[in-house]
Image (cartoon, rainbow, N blue to C red; front, side):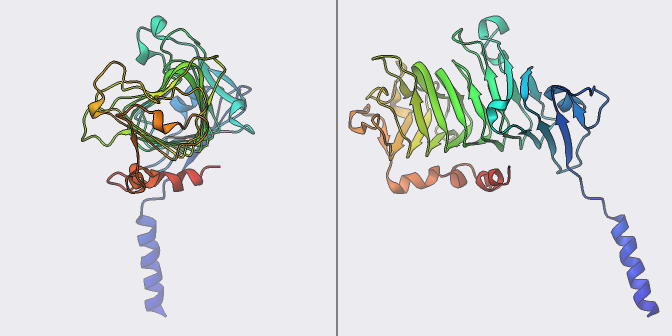
Length: 329
């Protein structure tokens, strides 16, 4: 018995010496909050919460429970805030809106206009609207994402030109809504857009992907989505145009409207020989694939496999964004 007591005591001492498990941090953001920068769990603005919420331990996550309201602010998630999650507490994403109205002319360039800028890795957003309300005034970014392993679920991205800057890293956008007029999904991230609506508000281009070398794993995959269009008469729009030489955009099982230009793609006056623009299983009145430009492609089933989210976004760490997104509310 004495030996058993000694063993139990040794185990208790060893357990006490182990580092404690890091705890997630949960804070509330609400327009009615009376909190300030000295608060620990209640803040009136998203940026105040990001700047002053307690720091989670290693590997833990900061959750911002954002209450319904319009947040007229610009949000910056720095590299020092990895593993941040924004959870909109409304019944749908239109009830939690982050909005600003910067455009390139006023801000001094496209890359100073974003309403939200995401630099922290492993970022997540659920049930949130990111809006740039500058309108048809030139480049005006609603969100810029320069972070690896970013997930957006049930989010809305509202703008006109350059709405969503998928700049760098691996991104997964699911069950979301993206609207704009010109190049409104652009950048050089490795990104999959799934089960989402992409809405064009005037004649223009859905995408402007900017891969700069054939060895890069970047590109946009638009999968099981629905492209919709405002009524702009007999004018048409295009699936994309190549911002850089090796631009890569793939549409998979996506519904396309009648006013998509039958050519599908625009070459932006450049040599398209290194561009990879492709479709598989397009449906709807815009799926006139026999009229596509000759340098675009229709994928085979074998080629299609590399563009599933679990393959295209896996990377060397075997990231599984589909499973992670399913754990969000």
